[in-house]
Amino acid sequence: MAIDGKQKTVLQLAGVVVTMGALAWASVPFYNWFCRVTGYGGTTAVAQGSTGEILNKTIKVKFDASKDRDMAWEFKPMQTEMTVRIGEEGLAFYEAHNPTDRPIAGQATYNVAPYDAGSFFNKIECFCFTEQVLMPGERVQMPVSFFVDPEIVTDRDAKYTKHITLSYTFYEIDLPEETQAALDTGALGAAPQNDAQASDNERLN
Image 1 (spheres, rainbow, N blue to C red):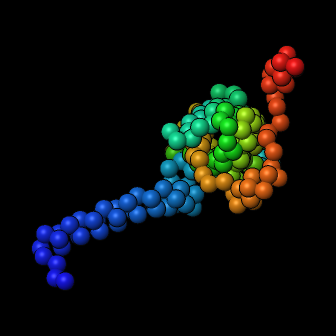
Image 2 (image 1 turned 90 degrees about the vertical axis):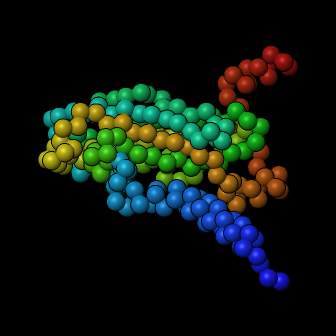
Image 3 (image 1 turned 135 degrees about the horizontal axis):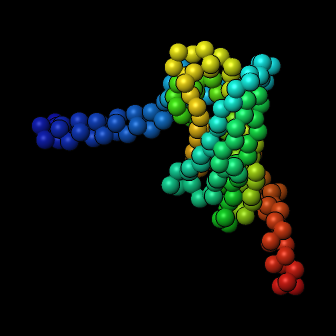
């Protein structure tokens, strides 16, 4: 069956829409990968440990938290800022809570501002390295250990940095296969009750 000009135009437009949607979907993981490889956009570095060199100079680190609009968790930093010596290992905590009645898996993306400081901010351990799964009602405190590379003081642009802001954004992702399988078989129970929940149940009984 021959396709007339109008039908051909419709098919071409549909193809453009599908292509644009695919590119938009792929752009997020590609951008994240690009930032991790190049340090562009304030992406931090990952290290096994500090360099051992600690300068007699301090820098302020601020902590920020946000979440995708479709993520049902509550997510916040346990401290808003701290002051560390350059080269010294710091330890901060973020808190996540799943207030829903279903298990939710999440993955955090991150960056650092100002961008010039991104490659000098090194994370040793971080909850963002792996996906996180919270059961219904579960609340967790997640650590991030870090240090600021002493080479920041010799960088042409970054040496003027007075404070660094570390930001995380959580997105909901599919449950890991093993978690979903455990739920399907009933092998995975509910999260442990916190003190407030236990107290409420005692009063009811």
